[in-house]
Image (cartoon, rainbow, N blue to C red; front, top):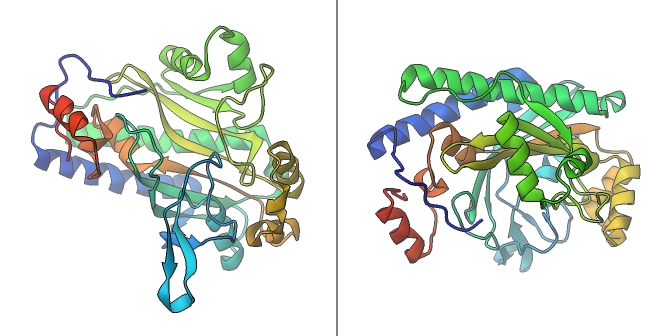
Length: 336
């Protein structure tokens, strides 16, 4: 997207002190609401995993993880996580949680190949969550029910925030709108994927796009998604209309996870069958992992949206090009 500088931007919270208080309020309230909605237990998660195990999320398979050798492990390579999509499923198997219960954690990652702009940083912080489900729950209706619970947690947080900071008025609609990515393509065939997202989200304000990763009728996926954790027919993104940036704003990527059949089908589509020999994939194919649904919800992203900020650098401390810092400073956007 590139850097976007909204006209006449105003920091509704005024001082940096008020912003820090509001960030803490959002994080405390939302994770409590999320835990209650989905019956999630908080757990501690790793920031690094061993290379070559298949546990790390390889995103679109082109992003480079931050790797380093470990001296006391014979220089074995480890890498900073991109996300915890597969680690969480392994954790649930280890914990032997029953159906209907799950976990959430603070995930901190480094993604040095991100294109830096208002909403992308090399530092990623999100609530990663995962929940055990039954095989019969692997369907669209269960996915929608879970999305509605997450959306309710966001709405409750927005309303509670308004009580403490009345200058931040609620904007979210009562309900979230669902649309399949193929249906969205047919509705706006002349637009690219991001333009379609903007069009549908501007109309409905809160949208869940179903089906991301597989090819659509135009021969292209709606967006990139790894082949070995989400089932591309049973996943999607939560998008909210960002009135400050005047665009659709993704706050969560989530989905029902692959079973053995769908994982192998998707790996073949990506010509990645070799991954079937990796640690995580072997356990899944052997039936040693539970059926799950899970996702990530951006912490800085959600704070940015709810606090009506113009740049994610107003929420988190990260590294930014000096010309971006200067341009933001001149537009009244103070990066941390």
